[in-house]
Length: 209
Image (cartoon, rainbow, N blue to C red):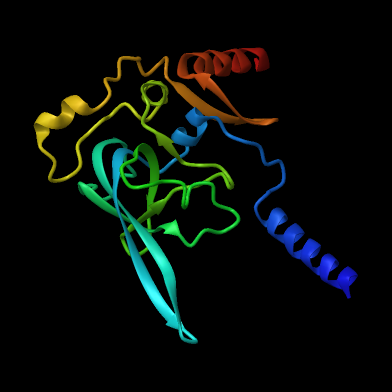
């Protein structure tokens, strides 16, 4: 009986692991995670809202949403203007085996967050690479990293925020031809500056002539 239980547990664990480990999976750098995110904001976790449910006489959380106060929008998906207060549905709970972000923040944290819109127009974490966090502490180092990534240079304020507060957003000084981008190659994605990528592409064309 113990052997059967052990085997069943092993198979379940294996299935969960395989479900979160695509073929050729590899960890992404902070730069790559930001580059491949739909929306990138600098924000503060200001509140967690618990939605409870009762089942068989037991009451417990069904979902815990995260309320973010958005300071700056570093990258947008081109949709409707992002509001100052954003609700991330299920941002803190439930936690599944594939997430690296859900449940890792606490009220008061200031973060660089990767978001995406849900089909009903709300928001949730954007996690294009499983098992990695897509919310980073808004340290000076991480903010500096963010300003070097291509596509994160058009900083705007969310709807309803005082325009004077733009001074709280990071200052992007790197030129667009020197920012870090990512392109696919024979061995997956790799990061290069825009200038390097253009030069490499031109050389490849010349060699084919």
